Structures are given as structure tokens and as C-alpha cells.
Length: 180
Image (tube, rainbow, N blue to C red; front, side, top):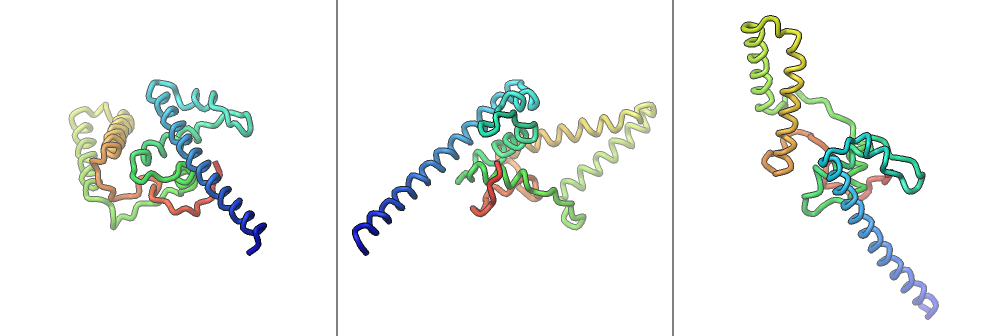
């Protein structure tokens, strides 16, 4: 190999290291940005308000609520993982995933128990308070929201075992296309 070729290969390797460093720095900044966005949401700013004020630096236009929602979900589901996935890969996995239909043969036992509890609750409410019948959808929605909130809290603390598909696979492979 000639001296000129060696210098060219050395330059290629220097660029490789600079590229990796830049990607790592960008990833760290994306996680920090997500943490700040979630902090604003937790502080009371609505997703709509944050989206309207959060400008895409490439287009100069505000992001939409879907982006804010995905950023929050990625942060909440993946930020504490070790090793933590690349932010854009986790984001794209979540944004591009299709919801799966539950398989009745693999429904977790606690879901069946919960469904039976809800059924008994509805029957009890209808028996003791017949005029509440129109309120049942609202009551069930509130109960479901409480359950989702508790499960999200459990997930953040790591208290629940993952026996269903609850979100992005944060142990991502590195060939996911980036479309952020």
C-alpha cells in the first residue's frame, strides 16, 4: 500500500470515529430532549401545547401531537433500560408498530379475572342502582384508565412481568430505518 493510500485509509478511520462520536452525542441529546419534554408534560403542559411550540429545526414547522405522544412513550418505556436503545430506533419501532390482536388462547389469567370482576361489578350496579345503567360505559372507562395508569406506574418501577405485547421492543436490532 502506498503512503497516499495509507493516509486515505487513516482519514477514513478518523472520519469513522468522528461519525460514531457525533451519533452518540446526538442520541444523548435526543434522550435529554425527551426527558425535558416529558418533564413539561408532567408539569402540566398539554401535548397539544407542547407540539405547537416544539419546532422541527429542518422544516421550521411545529411537531404534531403524535410526535409528542411517541416521544413520551419511548422515554417512559425505554429510558431506564440497560443498555438503553438508540432513541431514534426505539421511536421508529413504536411509531411504525402495528397493534396486535390478542389471541384468546394466550390471554393472561389476570385479564380473565379482571374481566370477571368487571362483569360482576356491572351486574351488581344494575341490581342495586338500575338508573345507573347509562353511566356504566363512563364507569368502565374510568376503571380502565385507573388500571392503565397503575400498570404504567408498575412498568416504570419494574413491578410487572411482561406477559403481553405492551409497546415497542426496546431491545432493538440496529437495522431499523430512521424516519424521525
